Length: 382
Image: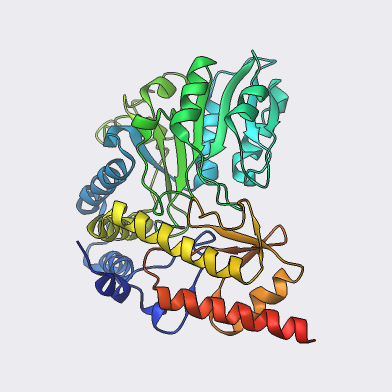
């Protein structure tokens, strides 16, 4: 297993800045940058048509993803982003007029608009009530109706950091004969997941946040149950390709999740994700989860002590993910103050969101607390 020192050496930005914005976009490791550089240089002249030589990297990356989420590579396929994956689900299910979709009322728009767009098919969306981004099983069950076909929920809520008990939710969905779809982008790379053990039917995620990959590349997981229902969109790589008879049109789809591949992939993004997943797996996802949750808990403890008002959890309660969020009347001002001191955070819906990762040190968290305390002192003094 890698040491913390070896891991931090992969992220040179950590020398002079404290990046606490992984819930917005992750950082690129040296391995990822090297992989991008190798790919681009190869395409630059050494091996311009590198489709065949790069094919093993594509397959290896699908295997890495499958290993990461607890399934077989045949159940995983690349998409451009989380929204694209959820749109495959939304547009592919055989809806009937009067069908309903249940979605928490605190979801990121990527997990809402694909289903609102079904209104012209007679499909309605029911929003599950929440308490500062926290959702209960009771509220989910009360929202389900006899016509609910799908529940689509974030594993980790983008603002509160609330982590859903997917196993419990899937058991509820099974009792009501409802498909379970999961937006996993705020959890993968931060927490560990077993999609088959949890009973997830469909999952979509981008790779550019906690997984530290490039923007513009994500992936989906499709269970055999879901695949039977989700009609794929035709492209030209959705089925076997006979390069000797390209004009003998024969519309067939792969038996695996590869049936959802439309055409040419984001190969440079795959090269980067391949490298960053190798680094993550070398570091050990379980170790990374423990480190991240410990760091988030320490940050929350220090900021709670300063009197900031937590959002999505009670004061003194440890975060369930890497997201630690606060209310503050001058959230934008505090974010600017931190940024001027090379500490990156974000403001979403007027709330201050901190999102550390597993490579941070306790000393860095102490520095963040000191800078926040300094801002609060100056504000009170003025």
